[in-house]
Image 1: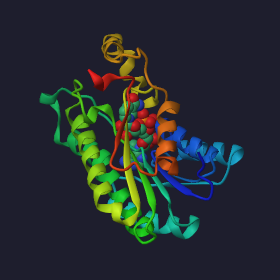
Image 2 (image 1 turned 90 degrees about the vertical axis):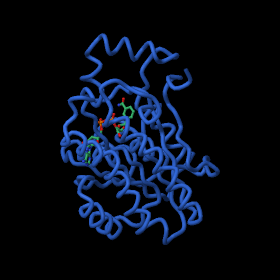
Image 3 (image 1 turned 120 degrees about the horizontal axis):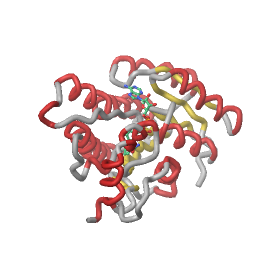
Image 4 (image 1 turned 60 degrees about the horizontal axis):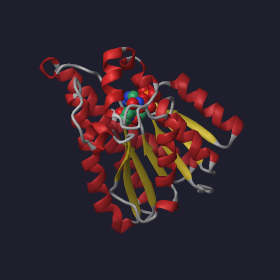
Length: 250
Ligand SMILES: NC(=O)c1ccc[n+]([C@@H]2O[C@H](COP(=O)([O-])OP(=O)(O)OC[C@H]3O[C@@H](n4cnc5c(N)ncnc54)[C@H](O)[C@@H]3O)[C@@H](O)[C@H]2O)c1
């Protein structure tokens, strides 16, 4: 697999799945642009990539601010060049019982996981991909888009929306040569899940649901991101690829 000569932009690239996906794409030749809101972590990821593999720049962008997204993409295109690959990994979860979910919680999750993700696709689609009739988008969804998870009504709803917007974008933009897919992991060992898996009862529930009897690693998700980003997956669009150790087969 090679991404030589390609420019890849990753949101939520300061940590977890976004960080490892960025590193893996850099290792197969992509030039990286990192987006996120935690400047310290972005700078760390960026210097890790620049020192060991290749060119990497970072930009502090809050994906819930749609105006900021569009303006930043214009700036990035001027400074780095046209974007060939977009990986949307920025995302959050605030576990709450359905009866306790506040409007603020609902909006924060939807604004980040759905609105932010969609408008990143739209900005880069409009500015970089549709005009050049090429491009690849990989959205980080979740098994939560398909199965019910307790205390996650807003999160599951947001990931269901990510799956659907992935399919619609794939359908609409196929004529422009833009492929749009998603990866749907089970629980992955990242800062995102560290706190929730301290609860042994919850960890047992998770382990019992995964036929392979372990959590996914960020690298196992990043490997699928890389496959979808390269032309090894040239006939795949609109797919939601599970990386879930079999959770969603039963
Ligand atoms: N870790 C898991 O178990 C798991 C499982 C399935 C899906 N996912 C999904 O994978 C994606 C990445 O999660 P992760 O586990 O790497 O978590 P993470 O917390 O390590 O990374 C998420 C990143 O997104 C950034 N971010 C959050 N809100 C943002 C905003 N408004 N603007 C810009 N950046 C923002 C954070 O700063 C962070 O760096 C998320 O979409 C998550 O829903 C994670």
